[in-house]
Length: 144
Image (cartoon, rainbow, N blue to C red; front, side, top):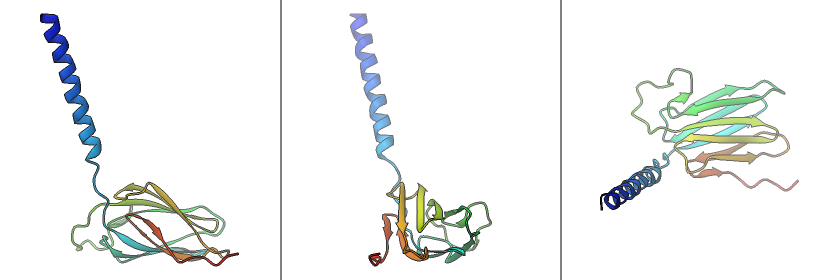
């Protein structure tokens, strides 16, 4: 009888632990409501945030024929002082933007409904597209 109680207790404890893990996994934070216009060119990256940021405009210069990337969050470029220390509290998001070839790609570390995305520009390599918590939206490119 004691063995039966021990087995029931162990199975019950394991079930409770599994439910706790599942609820923690399901409680992943909701995506942050942000929206920014990403513009790329041979000169670099320009970002204009229309919602969800404590900044409005950011620019990052790129060198021709060299990898170009920058980490951006709700307060500006990662590793640099906030662009507007007086801004109201913004909900966290964090993305890595990489420019190369004929477009850009992004990886979301926090605050998006997506993990990675890419956007292909025209043959000249300069373009603009809006990126938000749901993905990338841009004009249709002319057929080549």
